[in-house]
Length: 269
Length: 307
Ligand SMILES: Nc1ncnc2c1ncn2[C@@H]1O[C@H](COP(=O)(O)OP(=O)(O)O)[C@@H](O)[C@H]1O
Ligand SMILES: [Mg+2]
Image 1 (cartoon, helix red, strand yellow):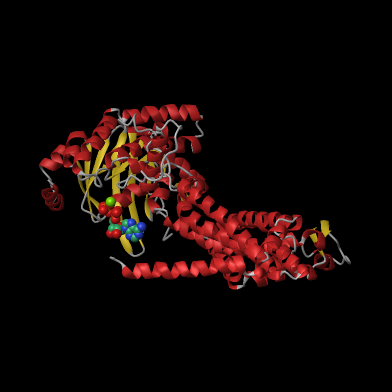
Image 2 (tube, rainbow over the protein chains, first blue to last red):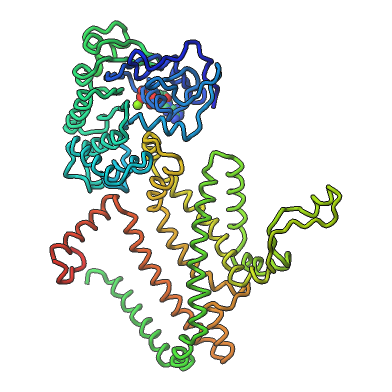
């Protein structure tokens, strides 16, 4: 720990205003390297927020702060009105115990660039693992739901395959089903298609579009400009640990206001 | 001939093998019938079952469990636990097993009774002016507890735990960081992640050296004579040899027994390794293929070796 988050300046937002995520002046350093330099962000319920930015700008780090995989050094993050990782008593913040942090993470699904499926478990067992262990669901109930989820992502015929027997696109779809099995109210995607062969990107994006149509709140780190334009409700451009520009994806992409946004978009388009 | 060197080597080996068999058959000092007659006697078999097989199983069970605990301590974020674990492995890897066994066999010299209760009770009593305060709940004579078997088990298991700790640590560290991350993101606790996600995957790395450790342990039970503990295979064969002045045949019997036992372990190791390779590409695919072949064959005819 390099320091406690700052004392609060604003009063905690209630779950009013339909805000699912609210980040306020989030700072994060690794040793002497300051990676996040005061990130502010708001994502409304049901919204798809696309996070763009050059490599090393702190997108993954910010995403990992939202479910407290990284401890932030200053600032605050609320998900669905709940302060993440800390408990406020008076005007002091106390770090939560491991158990409480784990409980908060249940409601936040995360999908990784490199899938991170459990290689010693079949697709079905990958999906039922957390519901059985963490939510203590009944075995039959967890299984039925897992089958339904795997069918939804188009893998009803791969239930008993191990990850090593699946293509990258199939593995990523299992990973999405695995996260959905915990009934999250927020889904975080960290470059979900970056490790895929080009011809497999579409099948994963289709599943994500389907989720978005269903009203899932999503924060998606991606370089897929087409996806951002088509599905995104908001676009946030990050560079060097700060939010440089944000707004309606179609407007920002068509008419970026900042130089850094413009030169980045020129490279990826 | 394309490989003359190879043929020469084969010829030399064939001659050596023939000489070896010749000695085995013609040298009377082998006393084969005497050996076969004595290597299955009840005391030998009892020694084999208790001091060799049971001891190996118990020492490995205890050693592996304790080794996992020490490995987890070694990887803990608590510096005190880390230091304690490091000290433990240092001590138990530095001292030879033979010496450890001799020490544990003679621990009874330090305490004649082992008692449970409030520690330092007499001293605490003096602090409050009570003479000879005794707060002991129960106790036994150390000769009852620290039998030869228990002393031997402690010596072997504690030493094994030090080696296993290193093996388990390497196994845990071999598991991709992303596994722990994905599991934490699903809301699993650290203990759950270790038990359900990390350790099962670490097993793939842990099992092969553990098989070797088990085989080494089986052989090291012959060191129990340092305790001394006599209900053990080698001790018994040695005793028969010394009693009957047929020392060499009984040593050959020991060689054959250990060859036999070790071979069984090697077979077990093969199947265990295959089981824990589940979900890891080649081996798994080979297994699925084998299963589908047996299914096609309808279980009737035998399935040939390699397909
Ligand atoms: N665990 C870590 N320890 C040290 N440095 C890190 C760690 N994680 C990320 N970084 C550094 O933080 C910076 C931002 O990384 P990251 O958030 O992964 O960027 P992005 O996802 O936008 O490419 C990079 O310079 C990276 O090297
Ligand atoms: Mg990244």
